[in-house]
Every structure is written in C-alpha cells, then in structure tokens.
Image (cartoon, rainbow, N blue to C red; front, side):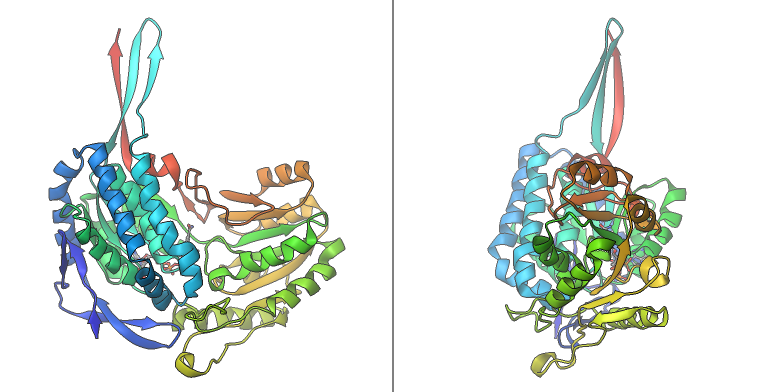
Length: 480
Ligand code: NDP
C-alpha cells in the first residue's frame, strides 16, 4: 500500500516514529494509502529546517520569489488530472467539482500571491515640517499553517502562498483526513526546485502534529482554518505566547429570500449554495429564511429541484453530490437529522443514507435533506452540521429576519436575495457576518477580505489582509 511522506528540508521523509495512519477513500469506505503518524519530533525537524532557510528566503529578491511560486502553480496545473483525481478520492467530492473549483483555485492562489508580492508596498506618513514615517513590513520568521478537510488543497494553498510570498518559512499541516494533494504539492515543490526548508509539510493527527506546531515557541504566527472548538483550543495555547493568530472557523450561514427576488433563477442557485460539496463548504447556507408570502411556493419548487440531485460515485460526471468525508462525519450528520425530527421538524425530502451499488457499496453517502417546521432557536438551527442538511423557516419582515439570522453564535457569511436595492444594503449592513452576497453566492475575488465574526473567527485572509497578517509592521520615523 502506498505510504505518503512528510516534506521536510526539501526531502520526502518517513516520520520519526516510523508509524503510519490509514487513509480512507470515503466513496468506498476502504483504506487506500497510509499517512505518516508524525509527532512533535517531526515538527521540530521541520521547524529547524524552516529556521535555517529563513535567513536566505527572507532576503531572496522579490522577482525570484515570484518566479518560484509561479513555478509551483504551473507544476500543479501540469498535473491537473492527477490532482483532481486525488482530491476527489481523498475527500469524496465529485471529480467535476475538484476540476472546476478546488484545483484551479489552488493554482490561482499561488499565482495571485506570486504577483501580489511584487505590488505590496510600504506605507509612509509625512508630518509637514516635522519628519516622515515609513512602515516596514517584515516577514515574521517561521509560521504555522493548519487546514481542514473540506477544500483540502484550496485552503492549504490559501495560507501557504501568502506566507511564503511575504518571505516567511512555513511548517504546515493538512487535515489528516485529506492529506493526499498536500503530498502531491510537496512533489511539485521538489520538481520546481523550491529551496530546502522554506516549506515543510508534516502529516498526522491534529492533537499531535497540530498541537506541536501551535505549542512550538519558535513558530510566531498560526493561520488556522477548522472547527470553532479546535480554534478555541488553539487560541488558549497561542494567545498566552503572544503569537499572531488568524482563525477561520465554523458557520451557520443564513440564506435570506425576500418575496421580490427573481424566483425562477434563485431556486437553482439556492440548491447549489445548500448542497455543493455535500454541504461541506463553510460558506454553504444551511438556514434558509423565506418571506412568508412566497414560503409555500418556494418550498414546493425547492424540494422538487433538490429531488433531482443525483448522489453518486464521485468519479461519474453525472453525480451532483459525492461521498461524505468520513464515517464519523456521516454519523454526526445523521445524528443531527434524528435530532431535527426529535425537535419536531418535518423532513420534506432526504433524511437517509444512500446505499449505492458496485464499488461504492460501502461508501458514506447521505441524501440532500430539507427540513421545515423547526423553531429558529432549536439546536438543529443553532449548531453547525456541515453536511447536506438545510432548514426552511418563514419570516415576516426585515426586523424579524435579522433577529433570526443573527441569533446564532456564528457569523461567517450570509446571502440575500431581493430586487430592492435599498433593502439589500440595509440588511447587508445589519446582518452579523464577515462576508455577504447579494443575489449571488460564492463569487470570490481574491483581493477581498475573507473571514467571519463572532464564533466564526478572528482576523481576515485574502488580498492585502493576508500579506499584512504574515508580516510585522515596523514604523520608522525620521526627523526632517
Ligand atoms: P478541525 O477543527 O477538526 O480540524 C482542522 C485542522 O486542525 C485539521 O488539520 C486538524 O487535524 C487540526 N487540529 C485538530 N486538533 C488540533 C489541535 N489541538 N491543535 C492544532 N491543530 C488541530 O476541522 P475540520 O477538519 O473538521 O473542518 C471542518 C470545520 O472547518 C468546520 O467547522 C468548518 O466550518 C470549518 N471551516 C471553516 C472555514 C472558514 O473559512 N471559516 C473554511 C472551511 C472549513 P486532524 O484532521 O488530524 O484532526
């Protein structure tokens, strides 16, 4: 069976423990590769390599840094088919989604930050007759990047690329559940001639490898995307050590539909914002609020559309939804569907596991599930499920919807569907979220700030925000 390797000091290495963890293909439920069960000793090796590389990497010319990041992007693009197949196999997502979104976006992340680094300028503030301030933006040193399983390479590269672009060296950990494309990335880095030690990828468990990265006193910044509880744990370790922290955490996003929306168009779009990637995108809308005048009409059209979704083998191009990422996660989602019923919800469609034939007979599949009749305060409507489960709730007016939308502890994103521009602006301003889409969903411009409020996180990624996060500002004043 194939054994993956860590990428430390420019080489593919065995974990110090020489032990491995099983890596499952969620569509078949079978183990298909093994990943290093690394621990703090591997993190230490990675840190030492990164520290040694920092002196040279931080002084590498901007143009050379740009060229090498571009080469990595080209390297991924050249092996597109391999990356697409690997991402789909590891995560369970349909191959066509990995081809349309995940892997092209990872390529874009590297290209975007490769070009951004050449345009990232220092600020200066003149004080007439007194002098001038200029603000240096210096790399931090060795930084830690920890990413989740839902958009594996997409989110991994979203952190690594700006960290490297700003002159830092990186110790990174992909999710243990979806390590494969990070492993392919390490091969691409070797092929691209990436300098040794600048990027190090340590595979393994969160509570061993992730924890060791967070606890290492020489790693001065942590960029983390994952669950809110894990974020809390990371903050409790990193904050007393005064590390810079960027936390992109969970969500329970509202989809807000006013009666004056373009009805025909939005039904399809809301199906997509609810069930893309099996609902395992932190930006999926899981609480759908509909203005009461069109509640019944929307419910009927939406449920009819959801029933047309095909759950199937991720390798088949006609599958709209693939497998849930792991057995444990499938069980968690099913337990929430049961909870919804106990809380008085009516399942309008879905609610069950899907049993497929052939190679996917033992895979982890769940029907797209739509529930209504629940109170907005119940647990099903307050807790993150992170799967193909949405609830429908009617609302009376703007005040009512804002109260319900803002009632959760999370605040990642919100989507508003209306043709009343003034109302769209009013609601966008008052909804508690870091990202709002009006009459669209998941339109991403890499220059814009990305992140959440409340329990959805601290700090922002994207554009200059990430470049600022991965640098220390040092102000210098000169008297005139
Ligand atoms: P987790 O929080 O379980 O894990 C995220 C990463 O952290 C994994 O690499 C994990 O390793 C690691 N980890 C776990 N424990 C620790 C620890 N004690 N110290 C350091 N690292 C640790 O999240 P999931 O992977 O389950 O991802 C799903 C979550 O991510 C959802 O809540 C989702 O909303 C959120 N998310 C947020 C996004 C955003 O932008 N706000 C985007 C995408 C997802 P391991 O895999 O081995 O457990």
